[in-house]
Amino acid sequence: AHLRAGNVLLVFPEGKRSHKDSLRRFHRGAIAAATAANVPIVPLFLAMDQPYLTKEVPIWRPPSPPPLYTFEWFDVVRPDAFAGDAKRAHRHIVELYEARFAVQHARQKMASKGTRASEADGRRSASRVGT
Image 1 (cartoon, helix red, strand yellow):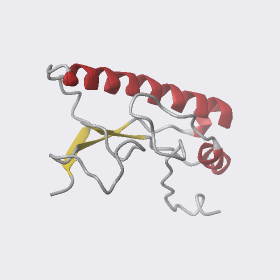
Image 2 (tube, helix red, strand yellow; image 1 turned 180 degrees about the vertical axis):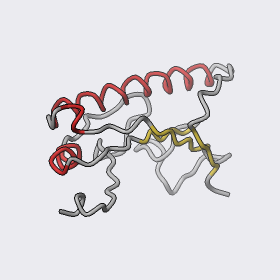
Image 3 (spheres, rainbow, N blue to C red; image 1 turned 60 degrees about the horizontal axis):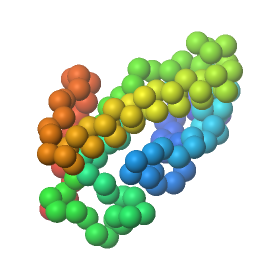
Image 4 (cartoon, rainbow, N blue to C red; image 1 turned 120 degrees about the horizontal axis):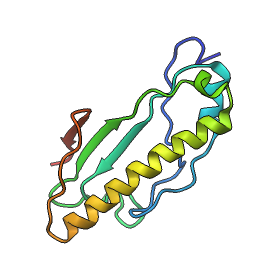
């Protein structure tokens, strides 16, 4: 009812903080709820230029300089495109994130070697958070 009424639901599908070099398993609950309500899903990829908010780098020990956050929106996923099948929609979204995470991980590896990674398309916005 909440989603059908037009309310927004923000979910971190892994349910925990990510590892710096791999994604955790995505939980299907939010995708199943969106599919059942037949409301669009707007996937958002959040990347940082250096490890932060991981178990290895806690929030109370921010790196210096502060990390650069990049927000990238994927195309809207419509449950009816998957005939209301939450498992298929979930698989599609996981594949989107896995492909994008692989690109991010490769960029971070290149950056750690002193090579500057090229910027992606104009659908991204970035901001520096911290001091």
